[in-house]
Amino acid sequence: MLNTKSKELYEEAIKYTPGGVHTSIRNVDPHLIFTKSEGAYIYDADGNKYVDYQSAFGPYILGHNYKAVNDRVIEALSTTDLYGVGTTDLEIKCADKITKNVPSADQVLFCNSGSEATYHAIRLSRAITNRTKLIKFQGCYHGWHDYVARNMLSTPDMIGKRDPGSAGMMDEAIDNTLICTFNDLDDVAATFHKNKNEVAAIIVEPIPHNIGCVLPEEGFLQGLRDLCDENNAVLIFDEVITGFRHDLGGFQKVAGVTPDLTTMGKAMANGFPMAAVAGKKEYMERYNTNPGGDVWFAGTYNGHAVGTSATIATMEIMETEPVHKHIFELGDRMRNGIREIHERLGMKAYVAGFGSVWTTYFMDFEPKNYTDLMKNDAEMYVSYRKKLIERGFFKMPMNIKRNHISYSHTKEDIDNTLQAIEDVLKELI
Image 1 (spheres, one colour):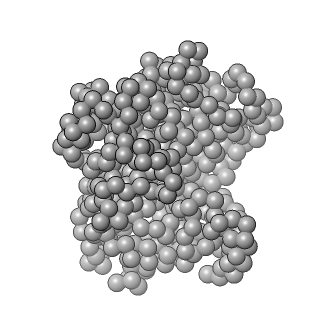
Image 2 (cartoon, rainbow, N blue to C red):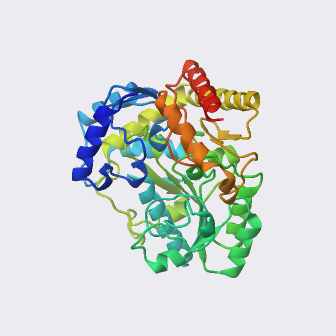
Image 3 (cartoon, one colour):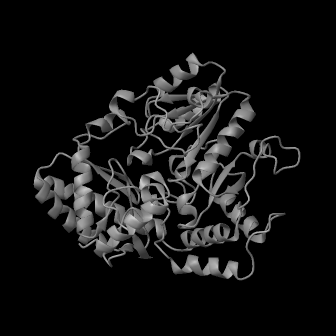
């Protein structure tokens, strides 16, 4: 594939923007400039077409530029936008849909990004408990703010140690965030014991998709629920990725475990900027959107017509069409097909996934936590993805990143991808 125009545009981009991109994780090799998207496909500046499994890290559950969603946004913007006072009929309808579908959502508040949602949920948990400490898990990602920006993609020597993700973070924020091992309830219990009556909340990706797809073991999420109850702490499910993609009710509905607070984003609006925090009414009414509430909640663009109309449209399509059936079936087709390829080639690799999400770890066992993933062959992982990009199949060319299937993908897309995967693996081994 020729990337002449992409290279020229990237050289122009770095003149005006540090690194040429507007969020750090987008700065990858190759530096492609994308100019068009449609359904399951994206196109770069040189006209190259790719079957897209990156899906902007997961928002596109229906597909890029999905007409039924776009039409609803255009319709909304023909009559309304943002007022900065009161509420709108779209906000009311959108909130109603979420509270009816998500088990933990007695009430909901809208914001614009997953990082905002987790920030608000953590602040609320500290107000509820009058405590400062937070438990998160090694490898999980909950946004860019100081509360949680530590021990994400740690190097092997920093796993479980003090590993802030950025210069400029406050020591108080770093040291009040405690790190545990996913799927290890004993570790969580010991952390509660060591920090008795100091832990405000546990925040967890119910499936840690930041590191691909590490599934919770049977009883782990319920164990977190029980430990929070025993220690009077708040349980926060960060469903920014899992919410809506794995079920209209989020992974909490699949798992049968109800947290106190839930954060949502990405797939809820099929690519439009939208996020939310939801939870028990007694907790949510602590926000000062409710007269007398003492926990600050604000945002100029909260509840904008673009996000609310897109969310309503996306949820209505999921309610009335076989979206999850389709993407789950294609997910199974992809995973099973890759496993058959590995078997034919005699490869040691593990295909992980749930529903429409999957990834291939180049290791010979199922990972249970971030430490296990240090056995993954990172060089092979990235080389494999780059060679698929050269053939027109886009997966993020970074180590331990997930892939996503949308409602716009077809069986033919999956089968063509499987053929490309076999060709690439034969070349690499």
